[in-house]
Amino acid sequence: MKIKSGQNSSYQINERADAIVITLDENSLVPSATWQLDIYANLAVGKAYLGTLNTVAAVDTPLAPARVIGYAICPGARAWTIESFGISPGGDGFDLETSAQLRGAPVDPAAFGLAPGVYRPQRPVIWNGTLATALGKDSTAPLASSRVDFTAPTSLVGAFGSNETLATIWIMFFDATAVPANGTQPVNGLSFNVPPGGSFNWVAPAPGVFLRTGMVWAASSTANTLTAIAPGPTARVVTMANW
Image (cartoon, rainbow, N blue to C red):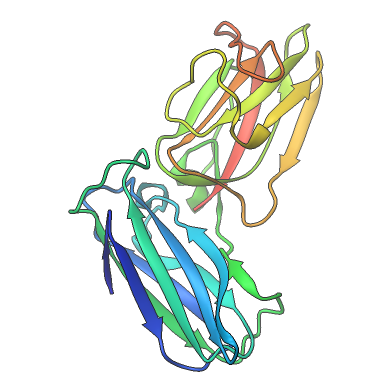
């Protein structure tokens, strides 16, 4: 089924199946678009909401414009419904030329060994916003006070790093395409206290933290909101994202 930005569409799978696999074929003129998919299982007692899947932008999916984006599990489902909504970059404006082909296929029996719910497939990890690393190439994380790793929707799955200064800093993460203004709060409270010479290591809960516009980290001299540290060799931070 063809889906477009700014439009609600309902996709039906009228087959009994314990699980479905969901694929998306991006033919968008705006590769930084994202799609929100609300997934329901139709049971003997009625229609039940399972979860929401927000897709990583096509620009962050190397060599995979047509790909599996997720799967849903609900033993005993008599049919399935996917409610889709296309969101253009920034989350507010709509571009009716942005479109994709959404498909779902029944999988029965479900052999995943997981509880009922909606899941992302396991993907190669993209390190530091370098798409080539998902294909096995190396990347680097030089010392810096901030860095823009992604400028399109992505899924943050973890980060680690060190403080290379003589003062306590806070490493903050933002859903943005540029380092935000001082006073901005980190997304989802992602602020890590790192003492002088210390390090941090954080793994996101599955299926990762979805960032709608992009991924930026910055070193701050204050804990709750950003007070940006001057550019320089402040910290070495590695970020990891799933496509």
